[in-house]
Length: 249
View 1 (cartoon, rainbow, N blue to C red):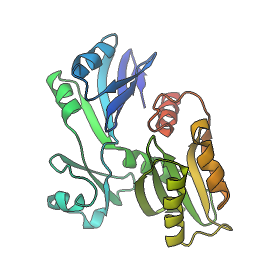
View 2 (view 1 turned 180 degrees about the horizontal axis):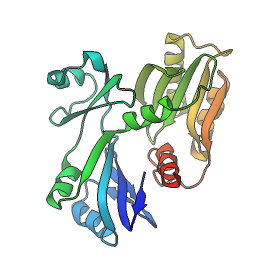
View 3 (view 1 turned 30 degrees about the vertical axis):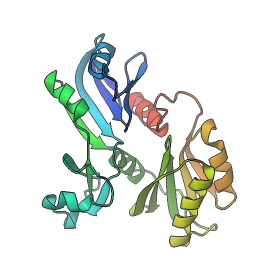
View 4 (view 1 turned 90 degrees about the vertical axis):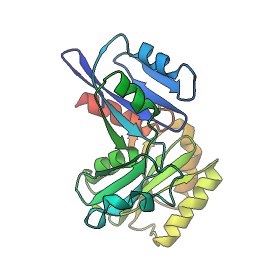
């Protein structure tokens, strides 16, 4: 997600609850968003190259998923009532197929810095990035596809029936047992069959090996991308792959 055009760079910055992660042409950086020196640290990090624009992807709040034909911009607060306590800065965007309005709140601290420095930027929720990527994939299972994105202290699950979106949720977890508890909850609700349905992890990484092993006892598994290295986004490693994949294109 970082492109070089005549030495002008488009940077993708991932804003998590506790900090931001971004990749420069030659390195990657992780900054504590609560640091007193956050602004100066960020500006120093990007001072050695030219920035054309920044794509800012928010992980800081769970979005609400609303069918676009039913979406009403005036109801933003209502959509987020059960998801987050932050409802002051609300954004929405459509998925690539225009069927879903993704509604979410965001922290303006980093955006205020970009505005002050007159840096162009765009914003997007991480769910939209995942949805758009998965929607464009070829069919993987004969039944339902349960896509799992493992994060530092949570996991996201998206269910598709071919290209038809079925379900999304994000669960905070501390260990593999909590992961299995919530996975079973979803599998039971959707009566997942081991014969035709499949769990598909977004990436295969050494740090999550126990999660794969425990899930493999109860369902067929598949993986999108299998690589334990080059994970600059340690909070959500599959986005490291998405970043590199976009560079290669």
